[in-house]
Image (cartoon, rainbow, N blue to C red; front, side):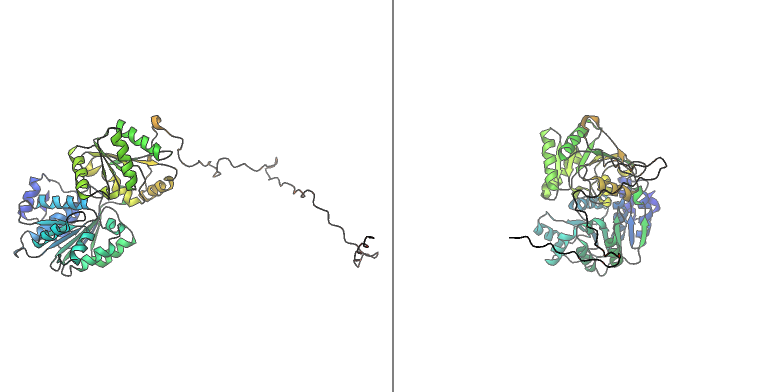
Length: 441
């Protein structure tokens, strides 16, 4: 029960109003330590309730502040606009019975309007690192009195090249008392370096090993001959698979637009989401998907983090993601909060090695699936015999005893024979050959 936590009564009232009864494992592990003021580094699977695990302790810190609201007290950094919007909504839900105010700064919004919002001084500021720095450099953002910093999806921010930006923003908060870092994956050396720089003797909470991530999601692969064949498979799946809502992931914006155009031409209710779309279109795409106005979203990895849509139970990887962590985040859009989901990856010959490396990373083996109506010719790399020899390699002939026969070396044809050296009659000293006499003219 949430009542076991030392949360303010107004926050517990909001929790009850939202029908939160039993805390998830990440909430049960992180909230008590965060309430003690500890620095945390938390790894937990997508859809496990990480947002509430840091929002509630942050609100609890600020709910009884006696100071007049003249400074920003908490800073939450995230990699994408969509995740920032979702986090802001969660803060507003949990803070509904308090006087705490939150604001958001992301790219794609009017710069001057954001500056005006900052002059009102929200208690909590949520945003993406790039636009935060722009407002900081313009003199519109003051962070000297920030008490707590939250880095959500920190590994993704590093992947997007925000490492220096995040470090600088943390340094602009010299009086912070607590730093919380949350992610769905363990990240690499870059993340470990950041942890060493911005966290002070942190408590490490590993709620899931990478091999345990997205256990409620069936993971399948379907082989394809080429991109056009992949499109045929996608259309068959959307027409025949049982699902409420689906996301199709691509690696490029061009491919996302192409697939979206073909689906609309086939009368599928679809929207497209990628970095070239303006903020208005991005909001519209997500809202239509959440409200059921569209059943299918075609997207790049912009939608791979933080997107939480009820009823989203099918993910199709048109292109395999470039890393195991990105794969985890993509398929994490389905099978959330204990629900079941289906993730299907389409594999051409150029995708096989990447798919195999992701299987090794996850310590899992994906289910192979064949759809006879759209079956192609490619089914994976050539098989290898049990003896370890590739199919098609001829065996060397052996004699009856099992010994290998050695073929006699044939002398090259038409090669002139070497003349034997001339020797003296006693057989000791070689004789010099006489030059032939010149022919008579």
